[in-house]
Image (cartoon, rainbow, N blue to C red; front, side, top):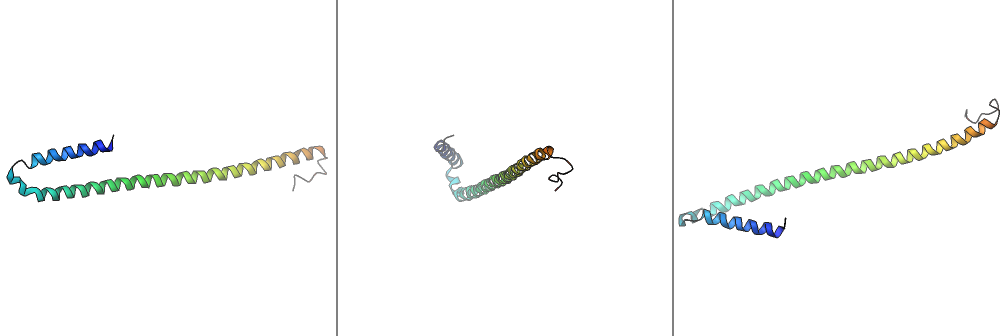
Length: 111
């Protein structure tokens, strides 16, 4: 929706409301009461909007923290996989070396 259109719709609704509310001259005395009621409604609406925005912001903050934690975990897993790959490569090289020599004389794998 277009924000300008929403603003225009709000102005038309307000004009219609006040036109209907203040039809009789005697109702002009209620203008101050109407102003106070509208002010309270506005304050209440702003408080609800602020609460909703804060709730959304809290949700986004929690989501961002969870994404950061997941990224940290992925980094740790990458490091562990890299270390495991290095250890497997070394083990493979040592295992190949030990198969070539006599098992009774080989102490490479026992250390």
